[in-house]
Every structure is written in structure tokens, then in C-alpha cells.
Length: 89
Image (cartoon, rainbow, N blue to C red; front, side, top):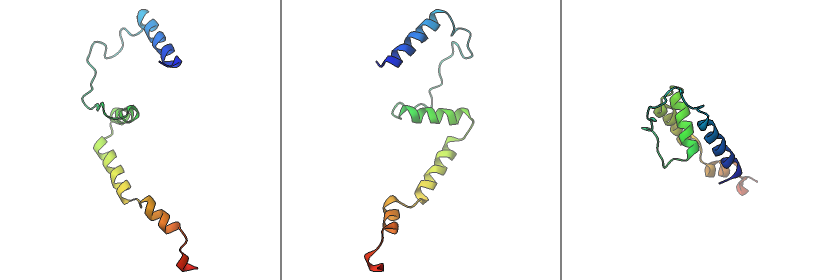
């Protein structure tokens, strides 16, 4: 465990011992992990959760990104386009 993780864990334990987490909204209710995919990277899961909490339609957001990526020129075609041709000299 890294030093910062250890410090964070200790502070969370101390706050819990003081009762600072009691009475918070949602206390006693199960977490809604319906849309959580444990195989996704944590940062991707967080981004999806933020978008969902903001009321955005994830299928629409990600579908739009897929369309943009599909329409974007590939790296190879950009490099070929930008590379000077020996024939044009």
C-alpha cells in the first residue's frame, strides 16, 4: 500500500469511528451497481458514472463518439497524405 493510500485509509477509519458518516443521504441502502462493469478500467467506470449522474444518455454519448471515430481519417492515411512523395519533386 502506498503512503497516500495508507493515510487516506487511516483518516477514513478515524472519521468513521467519530460517526461522521452517519446520517448521510442513502445510508443503509444498497449501492446501485447495476451498470457497473468490473472489467472496465476504474477511470472509465467513473466517467460513465459521472455522465449517468448528469442525466446524459450514455448510449447517445458513446454512439456519437463511435461515429466520430469511424469518420476520422486513420493515422496511416494521415501520415501517407502528409509524407512528401518522390514523384512530386
